[in-house]
Amino acid sequence: MADDIFKKLIAHSKEYGFVFQSSEIYDGLGAVYDYGQNGVELKNNIKKYWRDSMVKLHENVVGLDSAIFMHPTIWKASGHVDAFNDPLIDNKDSKKRYRADVLIEDALAKIEAKMDKEVTKAKKRFGDSFDEAQFRETNPRVLANQEKWNALHKRFSDALNNNDLNELKQIIIDQEVACPVSGSKNWTDVRQFNLMFSTEMGSTAEGANTIYLRPETAQGIFVNYLNVQKTGRLKLPFGIAQIGKAFRNEIVARQFIFRMREFEQMEMQFFVKPGTELDWFDKWRETRMSWHRALGFGDENYRFHEHEKLAHYANAAVDVEYKFPFGFKEVEGIHSRTDFDLNQHQEFSGKKIQYFDPELGKSYVPYVVETSIGVDRMFLQVMAASYCEEEVTSSNGKVDTRVVLKLPTPLAPIKLAVMPLVKKDGLPEKAREIIGDLKFDFNCAYDEKDSIGKRYRRMDALGTPFCVTVDHQTLEDNTVTIRHRDTMEQERVAIEALGGIVENATNFKALYAKLK
Ligand code: GAP
Image 1 (cartoon, rainbow, N blue to C red):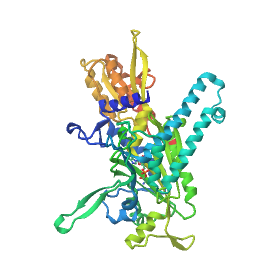
Image 2: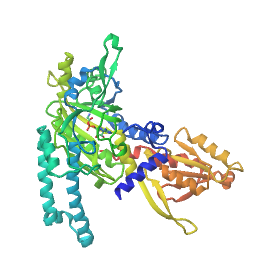
Image 3: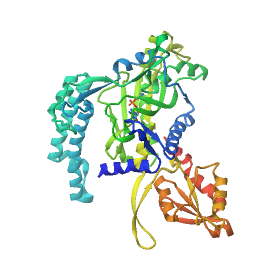
């Protein structure tokens, strides 16, 4: 069922110009996608929501746009050359390659699913009187599975923390994990695989340099720390935020735009006084959760996930997970990165990267709390949360299904569509006149093709909050009907009121007001 919805979402994204497979006419390029005419608008609105919430709403957070290509030593210093690896395992029969950690996470998810199934069954049986917490604490089948889950989880985190590749393989064997393609349990050893893409800069004759396509935007922020702090005369604590492309040679690239080889990140590094980083970590985790929840997709669909294994640079880390159709998955990471990165750059560059603290009268390397979210993953979250199929009864009594994207209105690619009822009698001209006035403030669409009902459906599928219909009465009294996407209700309003109605319902202010 969930699989079904996910497939529909992918088909919908293509059919309505949101997301296309890259290089499709050449049969595509794995895990690389292009955003179509509506996708790019939605994506830009998501970026605006993030950037405004960081830079506009925090007087101590500033922006940056650093280059994708950087000095190769940066990636030595950051640890990516040596440690940015995934543990891989191949199935000897299908020759398919998998991430060992993902196979084990799937095994854990299967146990979780068994527990959830018991809970769902009991919920149905007991109805309103059902106490889920008590059931989970007392039901023997749930308890047995919980014990299994705890034991596997502990073994898995120990193996990751100890970088024990043999143990990862042993867990896969003990869990009897089978290859989904061949069905066999005939596995190779687990090996580490570096995820960075590399290329050459300069001609070979001159001695070309191997450089990397950045696997995260964060390092561009670290190496600009001094530039920004000094030129902005910024005092700790302060943050630097940037949005940009990142590249990873993902081996298990699946689930559409969830895991891509070329993707976009929105990252913010918050520089703080050493010793205060865990307080700031707590503050940012709440701030970021509130940013997600403000979109109104249901608080129960989010959770925090504490990391099994801390990255080489972190002393605390948590993910914000969203309940996708394929289960709870990471959308954003919040890390307390200590002074690791700045220290490393100080050592590898030989340049002093310190902050003079006027209150303490001494210099030190600041600590960093990072928030890092994938634009594309956020896009998928927004699409998944907004996609609805509703049964509607038309005026002739026919029951029909309408597909509607209930996008948060500020994020909608098109804010209003203006439609002449018929393609004659001066109605198209009047519709274009309305767009002529409103297009400076809103993304408008003009649509005159097909019946008005079909046009409404098309706009529902794109998530357009308002459809405005121009009819013969419009020519007489300058009024139009305006139809609301979610309720499908229509009202007659004066043309001059349209701007105010659309502005009130679609501006970002209401969203920002909900943020903590
Ligand atoms: N600077 C820290 C960092 O990059 P990360 O957890 O590796 O941390 C942060 O990535 C976010 O970037 C993830 O939560 C996810 O939203 C997004 N992301 C990472 N890899 C991705 C991929 N291959 N495709 C799409 N989004 C990805």
